[in-house]
Amino acid sequence: MSTYTTGEVAKLCGVTVRTVQYYDSRGILTPSSLSEGGRRLYSEDDVSKMRIICFLRELGFSIDAISKLLKEEHPENVIMLLINGQEQELTQQLSEQKEKLEKLQALKKELKSVENISFESIGDIAYTMTNKKEMKKIHMTMLLTGIPVALLQCAAIILLILTGIRWPLIVWAAVAIPWGILISKYYFDHTAYICPECHEVFRSSFKEAFFAPHTPKTRKLTCPKCSHKGYCVETVNPTTVKSST
Image 1: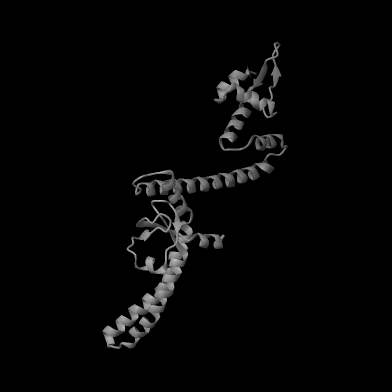
Image 2: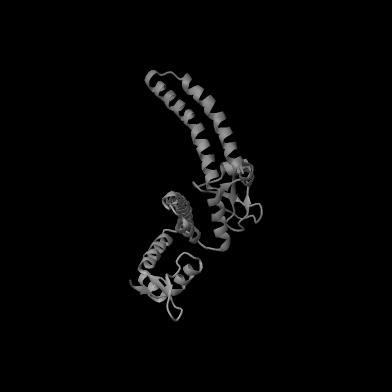
């Protein structure tokens, strides 16, 4: 039967000599014999065993898990448990890596709209990205409460066109005006703005915010800290974030 030195085993299995020696020190690949000069010699079975160890390591199994498996008299009793555990761990890692990738792509996209990129501007983007879910909740609340009002408006207009009846439109106005005031107050109570100049997160008065020119993500306001007047990035009111955590 052929025997192999440490170097030959390493070459056959595509690993370093140090790796073979490490597995020997951990007791998961001990040599079958020693030469007259004291050199470690491995059998063909040892090489096959080393290939299996390398395969399991490629799948992410830990040294301890492989050692436990090799010591089992009936490995079939634990192999599925180890596989399931490793599968769950890798799934979790993939989920975390996917989330990091999405954040990285979102940061890249946001930075393209920034004229002068600085450490502070990255901080502003990080703040808005961190609280993106809270902003979605605010927008979703506005949307869901607005659907009945919009449906009532459509029904009132259709009745007016088809029958000439006006009172449903009056009912809609009686509902829509208070709703508009309340939802606007809710919105501005839960939002804040980031000054592009000094990067201060601030809240604006209801009147200023309500009548200010705006885009879907910004509003033209005056920063209370540096007095800069310009389009400030919309974000979540810090007190809203604290109360939800």
